[in-house]
Image (tube, rainbow, N blue to C red; front, side, top):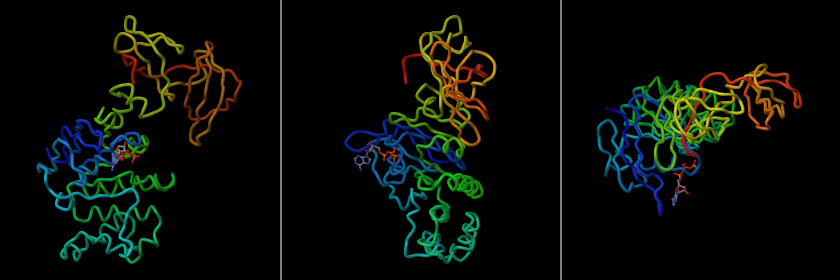
Length: 331
Ligand SMILES: Nc1ncnc2c1ncn2[C@@H]1O[C@H](COP(=O)(O)OP(=O)(O)OP(=O)(O)O)[C@@H](O)[C@H]1O
């Protein structure tokens, strides 16, 4: 298989951070590694790039074992957190930096600048660009030598929300247009689910699940993954004859024994069903979270597209769609 393959990677500092990590980035795909701060995302990128030596494990890029190969000969492009452009070179020279003379002449630089929406910015200096524009140049620079894989370390984290959204779509489009293989790390679940072809959830030094964003959200491998990739309403429950009793009603579930039931807030629709009182309403612009108290005192969160409900008013709540069950006491 071509692309980036990481097998049994153990790496860290005084303590191991990555503890036998397996990961596949298929050729032409964008894979997002999602994990909380400090879980080892940057360490993973540094090891793949050849900047930090692993304790053990194997890294292959398009069939080539990278062991012992220095960073500059790995065929890897890097987009750091904050562009890190060469401050004394203009945009064109930044992008052309890793190219040989022929490639500089054949229009590759202007092609890439057009692709990232900066066709007219070739003569600007990095200090004359916005943060988002600098990230675009950094992407063009990383793509220029046609690397086997592009590594992106939280490339949107320094930008404000609106710009981040726009840049995410443009980065995805540029990666698709060039057929590049890319590995992005982020702690932002919305970003990972929104941009990637595949998401790898990193927990306790291993990939707990690798799947499409839809799979990760709808069929999480365990409760830890489920809680990390989105908001959730959970109840302790015991499966009896294939169903569980919860304050929101009885549901059929897959699994057995004691564990936790998980429902996403957007599965709770308001108007009919179990009686509830509105405790609080939080508007997010396009939708709202309604915090509810059920008759037995349980509090649950519903996510709805719009509502005129106010705190203190009565409503009712119904669960739509499948209810997940995770055995054990986890996460
Ligand atoms: N040079 C270092 N020496 C010792 N420990 C380090 C070093 N760099 C990172 N660590 C530790 O290794 C762990 C993983 O760090 P890493 O930077 O890979 O995490 P991360 O997931 O990228 O975090 P963030 O999202 O905050 O950037 C952390 O506990 C960190 O404190």
